[in-house]
Length: 487
Image (cartoon, rainbow, N blue to C red; front, side):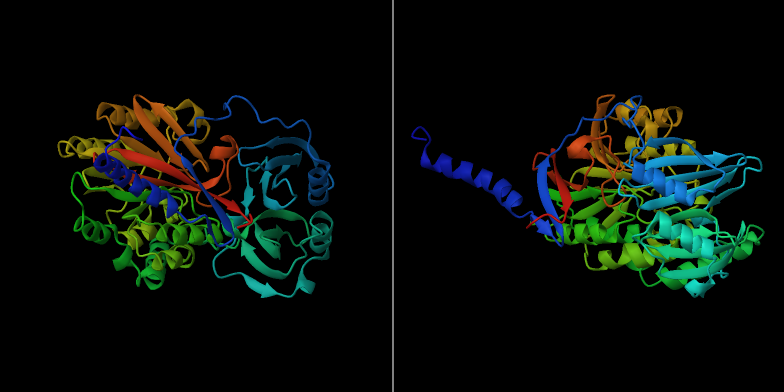
């Protein structure tokens, strides 16, 4: 220290101070969540070709399936999948039942397939609109109640309905966080978590399409009309660009994704982001905001925490967001007609948001649009591109990504234009990669069930905190959330 002149020492301390203050102003807890901050980077990934070891099916899960499966069906296979759940098949031609169970025995999903007719019963796609009626539990087929008592003794049914479905009459029973669908004879045919759309109602298959569209537009306007001015991306961009610091100015933003099915975490993450000092200029979400892209989901799940945030919010649409016929009608009503492929400039950066998962436009057209936006980026600007689906050209993500042949035109553009960073979602974890000389980050830890391929630093709920320095460099930190730890 004696060799440093005091003025120089003061200057060094002033340079170090912003970083120290920045780190000190990241709260270490929010609600019932403990928060840890770490550096960017997570190269760990269990090789896609290497199966997760599952030497035997736990006896507890086997007994649950045997209680739920028809007497003539045998358990024929099982596997432990990327999100840590067990997929178990019980079948006897032509009946096949697939059960998705959590390690603690919670039933997350049951799907039935008739292998002869190819008819399938998937809980969220069954109930015909306006046919579900509440009934007392005593009116439920006794066999269904007896089966649930054996299979899930810790979650007694608390509510029941009867409904017309595409498969005939079904009795719906709410037990724990799951809705079970039973036939009139009491056999449980399907099930799904409430948070994943188990109570969703659908238009009849023979409904007039124009009438359906008119109904969706009317309902969407009624439910979301009060919010569209605030959340319209064009409006938010104008508001943001009016205070852009210009090149050479420091600023902060947050990237997160797949926040669709854990309201407590979603709302607390936004509270945590709002308490950062300095506060981020905007939030980027890599998509999957809600379970199915319905207007009521946007109103009831997405909007309430955002109303308390007041930080501009931008999205790359996800595969759970595009709603009826994958056309993103409800999404575009809330966020704007141009909310699928758009960009804005801020602080010497061009931020580009790309739809690579809906059916609103062919991928070829989207690639052309993206190439034009990249080519038109002002000289000296850096570029960040945001997609929902990661790219199958990156081998470790290929198991749950856009197929390689569809990915290649996008990743070729990233390399050709020397994009500074690419953010994606869809995989429910934190993972990083370099491909074609470009840095890629997956941030999909906003609330959807975590995938388990990415180790303790990746298979965790999180968001990415991004700070742009005065020289334009992008520095990232990963803000991880852990449930119910001591404060």
